[in-house]
Image: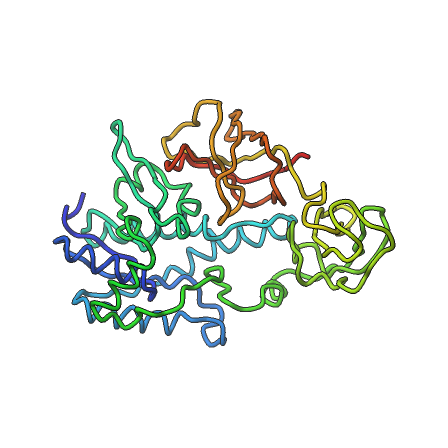
Length: 369
């Protein structure tokens, strides 16, 4: 299993992975830092921060007193994550590339590389925890519920969890910042990155424009009236409110879920007719779903949980919603919700929880009202 005390920490340049490396060194681990370069199409672009991130990671490694290796996984990323990302968008779905990146790059390519370096474990700055139980491993939510990232890790396997450490999963973010400042880490106050890994903070539609051709078509309201033109269905997601270009339109009469001045939301995408359907009001019935069908399931225990009642998230940063699971064959399952869920989006992940334990999940294929 490699050296039982050697751990390779993925140093991203951010404060969470930096404090993770420091904590492990304090605990007596033989720590090696590794900076992963996953994207290189536009290194000179104003939005691509990988050069600065590497400098930050190197400065952290210097302060902590560990080696730092720089590894380029851009080819694997393009093949396994970005190609799938584009396929999903072209099919009208909204994928979550961070889920795929964790499953395919950080806990496959990175783990394989760490094992070649003679390490027994890898560690990242994710807010999650691992617990041994019943002869296997469980993935738990991070203790800081406002930062919990188990949603993004739900596709990890028993073999991957057995070798993974998440040191900051036991801490609150305020504590992580305090430790970073106390030990003099140069990135103690660095802002958290919020953009998708390869897009960064750049305008999303501008980025997709490079890879997906525009196919404009009609925007229709619930009565079937054309009230605008969209730029291509791939550029919109269910529940989207900004960037619709119809803010000034005020059809007469109040609509269900909102009055005549209520904001517009994307409610449906008809790929066959190249039509974008929009509704007024956050609580419009078209935005509510009482059930969903998912596929491509990945269960952390290696098998589907028993049918029954669980908590679920259909998008990151939402409270767990009660649901009833019915698992089908070939990685398919269905969730029924006692309380309708808002803007359930094909391509996103539906992730199941039993209290603080993340059970796994799958990709949303369709929602039902």
